[in-house]
Image 1 (cartoon, protein in one colour):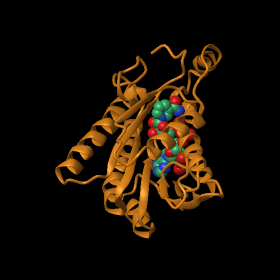
Image 2 (image 1 turned 60 degrees about the horizontal axis):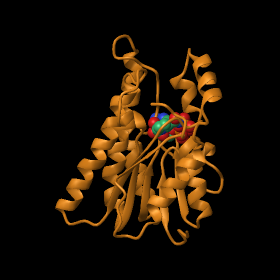
Image 3 (image 1 turned 90 degrees about the vertical axis):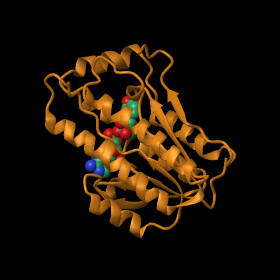
Image 4 (image 1 turned 135 degrees about the vertical axis):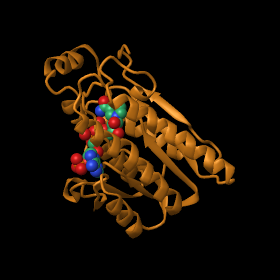
Length: 232
Ligand SMILES: NC(=O)c1ccc[n+]([C@@H]2O[C@H](COP(=O)([O-])OP(=O)(O)OC[C@H]3O[C@@H](n4cnc5c(N)ncnc54)[C@H](OP(=O)(O)O)[C@@H]3O)[C@@H](O)[C@H]2O)c1
């Protein structure tokens, strides 16, 4: 599958799923632009950019300097275990601003920057399909990602745009994000690792590559992907 000649932006390219996706797209021949709050954390094969998704201005500046794009993968995100009943509202705000508001802003800028045959993929989660017992405020942010994706798809179809929009919803993926999500419950994370074979970031990246390389009339709306032994 060649993505040669394609120019693609990946947010959250410094770690986990975003990093693996950026490298997989690079290996498939694309010119990949990647963001992180610190550009040095993005792999050197990738065109590196700094962008804090908490800042509307920085997002606007990032898209202003990017060339026309063929695809945008919105991968950056935060996950805290932060219950509705007694979680920390500061964590809620960070998750809302990065996972929802920042992602929606990237979608808006992406629509202007993508060509009419481009593809936009938002990384949601299985927590955007059902609320796990520890879902807390994280889960609502991931439901919102799927809603944003569908809202945008409707708007584009109303304008007769052929830009493709979809999301991907992974279950547990072994990345540094789980350290925040399981903070204070490290034994549960270790147990999870022992009992189940979690997805690797590369597993998710290969599905994203697939979503990008289907024929241009095919739009994949959402991919649910989890380890075969994940229960929920
Ligand atoms: N791991 C899982 O089990 C899992 C499951 C389902 C869905 N997901 C989703 O997959 C996506 C990627 O998660 P991951 O597991 O790969 O996490 P990760 O390894 O922690 O990577 C998160 C990425 O988001 C970036 N980021 C965080 N806050 C940011 C901010 N304010 N501005 C700009 N970038 C920011 C980080 O960059 P810097 O810190 O370098 O700025 C990093 O590149 C997230 O949307 C997450 O919700 C993860």
